[in-house]
Length: 466
Ligand code: HAM
Image (tube, rainbow, N blue to C red; front, side, top):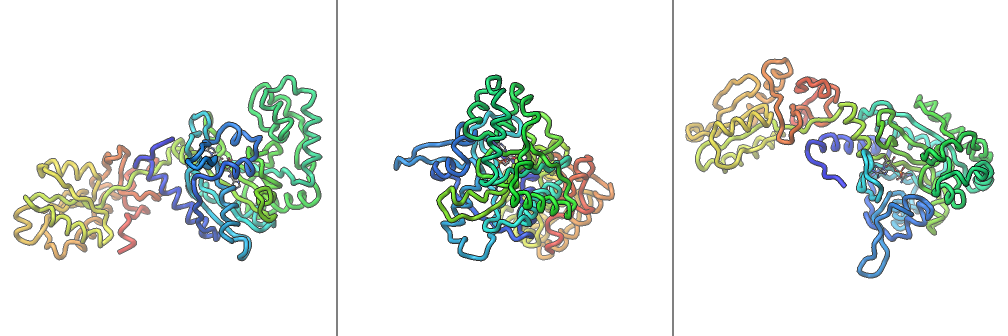
């Protein structure tokens, strides 16, 4: 389980903001469900024979003797909430999104953690293939918008309760002669869920997967038509995909469409950036009315890791203005000045504490602030402050009453000067990252190239607001 410190939260915040923006554009509203649920919800939804339920859940008894589990995923909870909250009574489908922590007691490695965050959506109450396309497109659009390179969309259909029983038998017929040479997990999967035999990564088992019957060859007519409509929809949107007959997903609730988004650049790490699919049988399995649904979940850490490996991490934002209360007893004046500047949407920090002016100026420089406002004894006595443009070194005295518009102007001038290569504002930020005046959602390429990315397309927070 990880701490996320400011060095990483700049990128993280951008991923969150893009998820909210793109989901909202498509009508997906936030849903928040508890991180703890009755264990039974997951054993029924995810499936008793899955790795997640058998090996990875954090399950405990509460003080009332009930078995509870830290959620390993959110689809089951969202479907539960959809019914318990009465959303099934309103217009359908209901489009929901979430972003939050999930818990799986798996062996930690790069890209695999015991607490990890998912951005996910669920569209519940409609079986039409257009919704599959909508959901897949959203996942794809998010990865494109945040700039993850080398994304490969893998699509499959694993049929439904009509055609899957015969397909399971076809799979058993294929694997039966090799069972003695396969791993223990696969021998168990042979009985409980032979689809998972397609998905084992162990060298002992992989060779026997060659020539295994493909699920798309065993689809019933309605499933086949649904699958074709999904593929046609993806083609219509010019979303590139690969049909992958081996893709079966690790959770039992899927029917028909199953998909994953892989990173071709995450060698040696877990390469699935996200995945999802239809779960038309899940509501009924949980004891609710038979209701179709489809969704996905994207791994936030994995998306972040892919950006990190591509050198596309964002830098922590820096203040616009650094206020130095240099006169004895000038802290309160500094608070008032800072409040004024923040009212003008300037990111402002105050240098509190006993420090020489020289030490404060060093701190100001390190902070990367574009402007410094110094409240010295002489200035305060005259009702003024000294304003220093940190890019050009120019300093002037400004009446306290007129400070905000002048400082805003000088901040813009400093950023423009820095952008033109006149004087550098790039500093080592307190977070340890290379800091610039770029906002978290500034074009990442500028930062990746190690160029000062101030000014240009990267507007500081305040300029639009003013
Ligand atoms: P999942 O494939 O189990 O699907 O997880 C989705 C994504 O979560 C994975 O592709 C991966 O990026 C990330 N993830 C999973 N486990 C870990 C881990 N231990 N550490 C880091 N990241 C991880 C689901 O959870 C389904 N609920 C998706 C869904 C929604 N299907 C329909 N609706």
